[in-house]
Amino acid sequence: MASGWTRLGSTARYARGKLTLREDAWRLPDGQHVVYPVLHVGVTVGVLPFVDDARVLLVGQYRHLPRAMSWELPGGGALPGEDPVAAAQRELREEGGYRAERFELLTRFWPSNAYLDEVAYCYVAYGLTEDPLPADGDEFLERRIVPAQEAMRMARDGEITEAVSKVALLQYVARPPERS
Image (cartoon, rainbow, N blue to C red; front, side, top):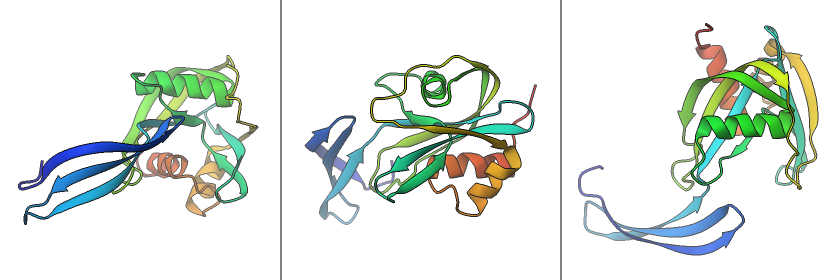
């Protein structure tokens, strides 16, 4: 931890579903005390699923904050204690209808490390076979298989705006994983 930063405590203020709003109290290096609001989200996963060598699966769903259809990669939150790769497999089956033979980590990042404790794991998935699980009760999904280059363009040009999907796609462009 950075020198002089002292964690004094944490208090949950509100919880609903998988989310908790808490306040973390800290003593700063200059001695002042501050309270930071933190939205506890936990682990999130995103999966870039290749249905073949040149095409990937996207899922579309209405998102209430932007009030629009959002094209994204399959993904979502890990269950408490769930390994991120297991969560990626489950989310791919729930949202995409496929099981992957192999996952490769693209990157891990904090979508907003000032106010969210969310850590996102982005994977690329290969060797897909149909093996759906039921979607979550509040998900009304549309699936689209597109050329991988089209998905990359959508991320680059702002048609894909959801952070985990955008980062996974742009990370893949910047440094594709080794395929064995």
